[in-house]
Length: 64
Image (cartoon, rainbow, N blue to C red):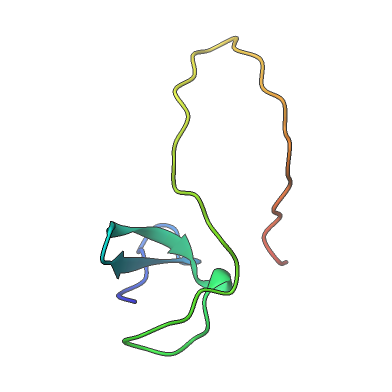
């Protein structure tokens, strides 16, 4: 578990044996440098174009 993103401060960089990516910090325990994942998180981004229709299958609102 690395540094927080400067623009998206709820996200931290995470590195595993299979790669690295940005994960919402609320999905991890707060230990550094090693963290335990509390919830699965998929970092796959969608390829969409203006006017494409989307169907939300799961909502994951940020705590506020």
